[in-house]
Amino acid sequence: MIIVARTDPRDPQATALLQSSHALMQSLFPPEDNFYLSIDDLCADHIHFFTAREGDTILGTGALAVKDDYAEIKSVFVSETARGRGVGDAIMRALEDHAKTEFVRHLKLETGNVLHAAQRMYARHGFTMCGPFGDYTDAASSVFMEKTL
Image 1 (cartoon, rainbow, N blue to C red):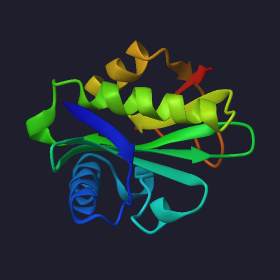
Image 2: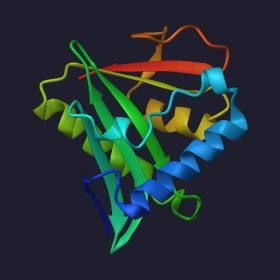
Image 3: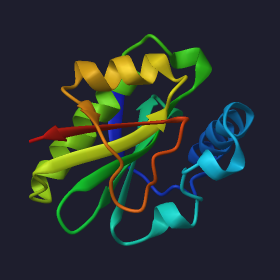
């Protein structure tokens, strides 16, 4: 059974998974188009970090960065061995449920233009395309999506 719960991003398994995510993003996109948060950034008070576990093994990560008038989905990543098992969907449901407890009305995210599986997952969860938001610029390798709760 997959359990999603708030976790410290400094948990060794979470950190290892995040480092794998960062390495993948660095291999796919130029440095100026990588917008992932560092482990330290994920520890900020306005960031709510979650992991999905099966037993004692962390399979995926996700975070909710609460802003003034929206929250941004960040750091959604599933280990290669756990893909296709519903881990990403479980994380997305947990992030949305948590956003509601924070009285968030709008969710936004930025993902890579070549991350087609991620884009399909976000669309399944009701996200639609939008333009850049916050501090983002219109980068060629970025796709921006949003959802109203």
